Length: 260
Image 1: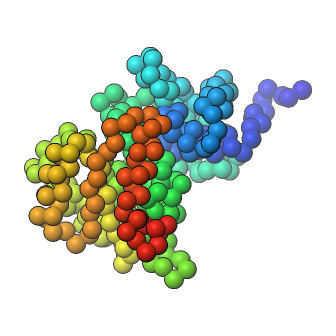
Image 2: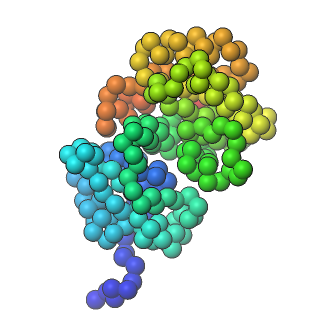
Image 3: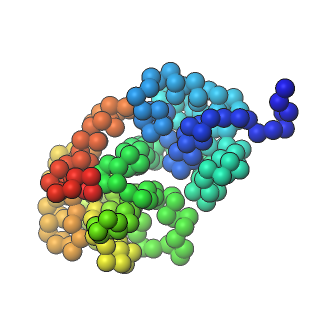
């Protein structure tokens, strides 16, 4: 008989799942399934989510009461992962409330890209850092922070890589706000790069916005290569498959696709 004061005994994959949730601020269950339970049915992920919720390691909320499951780490869940020495406390987030609805779409897109980046798309990165992690680590804050930063160390005779990903949902005026912010971000990335290859991928909504964005980027003539692509209209698990194809396009023109 187990002592109720003991920490629950969970398999290693559960720690992977809890750390994935904690690193994403708030994630959708389909993202957890893709990242931690690939190739398995939704039933497997659902059972583990129910177990973690019962143990009070995560919060589970249904979007608008009827939609997808949204998952957040609890303070107890964060402490459990840290005590197991599976992740550092600084890498995990346990927000007390769900993200505001006005910010949820953007957060889900960022975590879609983060989910793919953790399995090597669009590049094999040693570090996958969303904006909320960069904001915690970089003080004083720089004038611009990317939605997601992928870093790859130099190895096997190949140079390192610094790749920023920006999610543009069209809420900002393109010429007056978004493009000037993009210029500032490029300056910040060049300061961080230290001589390694640097690039930016901007994912936006709608063909008209994409056309205008590409024209604006070309007109600015920035030193860092910037690729603009359209976000998929699909949602949920299907969105990940569509986004995977979008993000693999830059790698298809490279001599070493796995390196982007």
